[in-house]
Length: 112
Image (cartoon, rainbow, N blue to C red):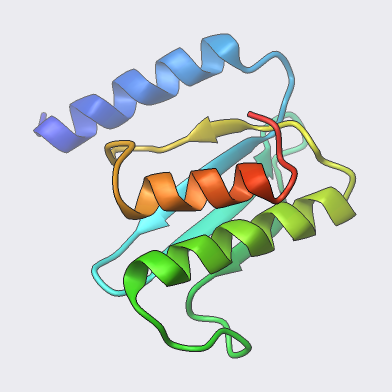
C-alpha cells in the first residue's frame, strides 16, 4: 500500500467518525486543475460541484484558481441548502492549493 493510499484511508476513516450526517466537501487536485464536490453519502448524490476547468473561469495561477473554485462551491452548495459540511482532503496534505480552496469556501459561508 502506497503512502498516499494509506493517508487517504486514514483521513477518510477519521472523517466518517466526525460526519454526523453532514455532506462532505471532497477535493481532487491534478497537476493543472482542481475539482471540488459536495456529496451527500446518505442519499449517494452529488449536491454541488465546481472545478477550474469550467468555461466561465478565467485562467490564472493555480492558487487563484483554487480560491475561485472554493468560492464557487460555497455559493452553489448554499443555494442547494447545504451550509454545514465536513472537509475531506483525501490523500492531499492541508497545504497550498487544498488549503486555499478550504479557506475560500469558509469565507464563502460554508461551515466545517
